[in-house]
Amino acid sequence: MTVKIDRYDPESGRMWTDSFELPTLERRMTVMDVLEYITLHLDPTVAYYHHSVCDHGICGRCTLKVNGKNALACLTVVNDLTELHLGPAAGRTVVRDLVTRH
Image 1 (cartoon, rainbow, N blue to C red):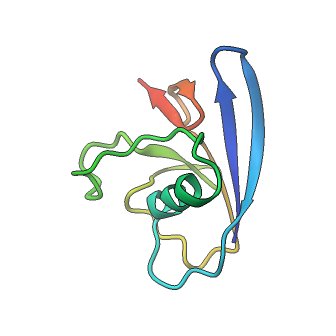
Image 2 (cartoon, rainbow, N blue to C red):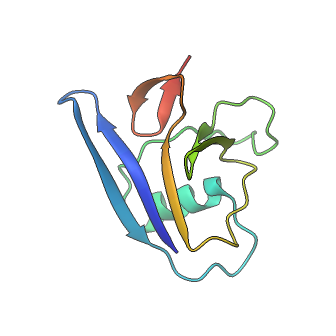
């Protein structure tokens, strides 16, 4: 799977898109699982919101754009996709990469 992530560095004001190649998905994976894989194995500098007691779609803090539409990273399953483009949620202020605030 090809994953593109829109990035933002608040210190420099620089915006860019990084591309990552993930191996074939062996199990049911959400956007959050993909982001965890990327930060553990490919690029630990990608910023996104995650906390240990979520993954139920309750708090909405992990909202981001998935292929152009706002979605919850913890609930959006990506196994049927060959390409994934992630960006900050529309209508929010970007803090860094995929981290936003209202």
